[in-house]
Image (cartoon, rainbow, N blue to C red; front, side):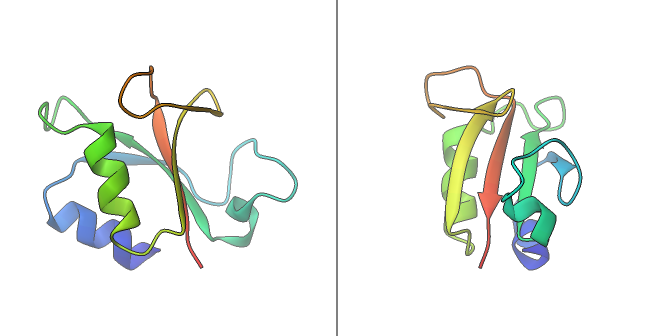
Length: 90
């Protein structure tokens, strides 16, 4: 997971890690196993990046589940209001 995050940064994505093992998640969440991460794009650092592209990049770097979320609820990456991407790793 950390390697994927590092590769994303090296590829030019700018983001903030909003949660790895902390936060308010379901009791079975992979966050508490250290196998999930929430990432919010930093548009002030790189305005042209998009959530659909970012989600695809996460999937291409080993994430087994990638979904855009708003306030912890799954939303459409392309059309909905997104505040972060949730990604799970094996």
